[in-house]
Image (spheres, helix red, strand yellow):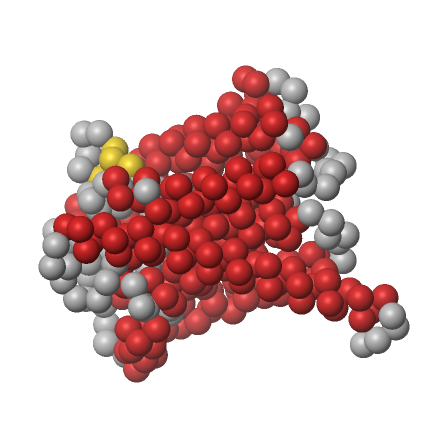
Length: 334
């Protein structure tokens, strides 16, 4: 559900960049006040895992479409909403800048749609209310699927609102809703099942991570998620479905094409040029047409591994800066 720049007008794109930027600043301020004994390495490995997982599109039978997990709900369960928002914003930013996945002008909208709703709506209002203390497996299952579906439906509905607000006449509201919401309902169910599988594993290996008074993370869980990120990004990504994702599929059903031209404007053109220069592995592969299947596979694996490492590195740097700031404040410095 990564929007391209063609779907948005500059005014809508810039507005949501400002909104997401404000939420990001607020989240960073909240995080800076927390005791960080274990969350920085956990942010790094979960962010790397989500980056890798988003590369795997799974087919949706009978539709010709595919989907991938957003990861916002899982991150919120493990990290809390503020750290989850920062982590997923980091993933989406690196995807846009270095892998041309989602537009730069549309980055704020993508962050809002994919990170805000699972972190600040679905997790606190739905998942926590239904799941409780993680003692009941059935409640865990209902909470995971329900919250994942709600978060994704909110996000997909805002994609529709953003395109309508941009004056995009190629995607009429009612018709776009008719295709977008049902396909993302199905994708949300799959994400809920994946989320349930991960938290069930953590519940059986290190349940303290799921409790209110979380303890210091053991090396085992960090290494497990790190290994999963490497395996998913470097190997499983090779088996991703080539079918269009839910957004592309919906656009194709409405317009007859998976992409729309969009209106020409200076801001969008400038953003596109920046992305073309910065994206060293566009669409998770080497520049230009792949000369062989082997080259395409190498490009995909390399993208998964490098992307996971970049996300992990950025979040480790974030944690370092937060700790440095806290030490200065503790010493009475500004």
